[in-house]
Amino acid sequence: MATNTLPAKKRTGKVGSTIFLKTLMALSGVVFVLYVIAHMYGNLKLFAGEESFNTYSEHLRTFGEPILPRHGLLTIIEIVLVLCLVAHVYSAVVLARRAGAARPQKYAVKKRVAQTFSARWMRWGGLALLLFVIWHILNFTNPKINVGDQGNGPDIKHNPYALVVDSFQTWWLTLIYVAAMVALGMHLRHGIWSASQTLGWTSTTSARRTANTVAIAVALVVAVGFVLPPLFVLFGVID
Image (tube, rainbow, N blue to C red; front, side, top):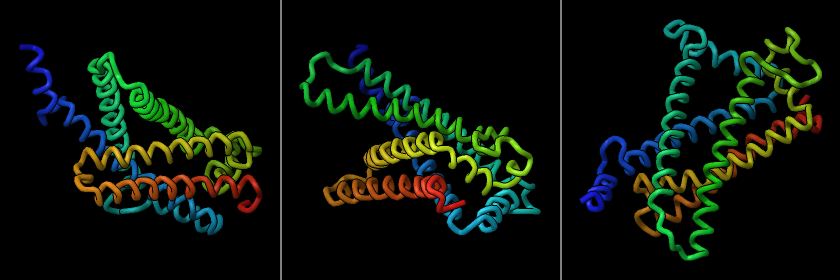
């Protein structure tokens, strides 16, 4: 009876089921995709100069006033992102454990190697991105740990443009950032494709081709868009 009951439970759409967790991970992933695209757009304002970038940064903090308090919009976004992060990580961990427990002992060697690499990359790549995000927050927000030449001076803490430029003038920090953006691109490529499958957007050959093209395009645009500003800072084009 237990053998017959388990698969039926996994096929249901109830909370805690495999289908529910895959959908939760896909939807939370969509939120992250939208956020990184918006964040990338903001970073590209570095090319417009110090005044433009700092005006943009200040506008984010005052957006919606007086209906919202200062930093109100950012606080809402941060809460949504934290909730999505918890949902995304929880779903990924539970699904990974279930996949490991249900995996049969005998696999075709090539299929097993390919699936294992894909799964491990998403898991370890996701963990690496999580650690990078924590460092990124510490470096660029509160308490603003800065490793550049200007250190933690009072002026740089209140000048987002100077903080970014000072940080990415440090070669090893820029290298870590570039490596993280490559990992992000790979994560987006696989994640968008998987989410498209989960949400039923790949039911036809044409739809699968479109989803694959969108996944590759978004991954490349985001990764390149994030990488350009720090590289231009490192090589002195942005100063």
